[in-house]
Amino acid sequence: MCILPLIGTVDKIRMATIEDKVISHVSLFNIETLIIDFSGVAGMESAVLQRVMSVLNGISMMGCETVITGLRAEIVKMMISNGLTFENKAITKGTLQQALDKYLA
Image (cartoon, rainbow, N blue to C red; front, top):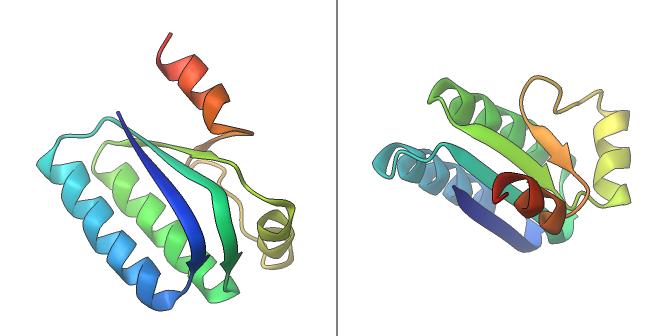
């Protein structure tokens, strides 16, 4: 299991770096569960959400389960307005602690 805490603004350039590193590390370290914590994300462009979905698809293709935590209301509203959902792509938990409680038990 690995945890990826995201902090600050996530733009297209930063998302490209995240995508490259996440896909590489899932393969290199045979990660079975990746927890991505969005609680520190201050802002995210709507176009970046599509890229996040692509990364989640790639992670899933590699046999890694993804858990999303800490989604802020602004990001959820943006997802709703763009018709996006994590359904069938990731498990969601309200907080990182909730995910850790489940996966470390």
